[in-house]
Image (tube, rainbow, N blue to C red; front, side, top):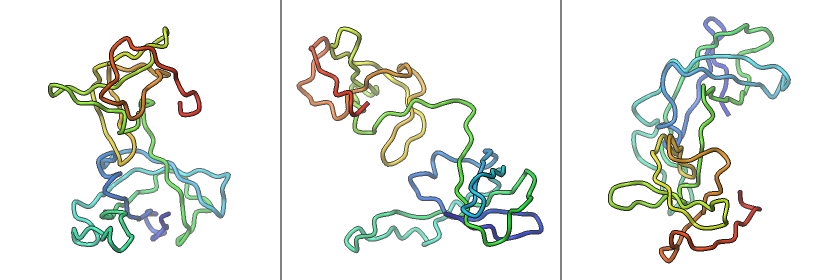
Amino acid sequence: MVHIVSNENLQVKGELSEYNLANLSVGQEVSFTSKVYPDKKWTGKLSYISDYPKNNGEAASPAAGNNTGSKYPYTIDVTGEVGDLKQGFSVNIEVKSKTKAILVPVSSLVMDDSKNYVWIVDEQQKAKKVEVSLGNADAENQEITSGLTNGAKVISNPTSSLEEGKEVKADEATN
């Protein structure tokens, strides 16, 4: 949740977690909505992402029950028609991507001989180890840039006893 802070050159300012930092860069286009006008959409562009966390690098203490990590300030310049958008509004932001990324759970990744793999269930319901190239990641998901096709059945949390060609049963509920 972020807030509109200036009407002159309308900007949205907020903080993003360290987990999202690697997935964003200055110049990326965004769209956003407001709770006040949920059916209206505005556009903008990321114009600033701080290199330094707001809390001066002191990560929140997991012992205190606050393990959200460091927060990095950012600014979005509104590029579209402002219309009914007002200073102080809370907005929800969606980063635009030119391509649809293939995401897998971080827990599905296996590293072997400095190469990255995921296990999939092939058409014959057998386990197959597939080499993949990695893109951006957050705390839960890893982007796969090559080696995997959209719709592949990826095995989460593969065990070391899993073998190539071994018959497996896909749990459709978790796909």
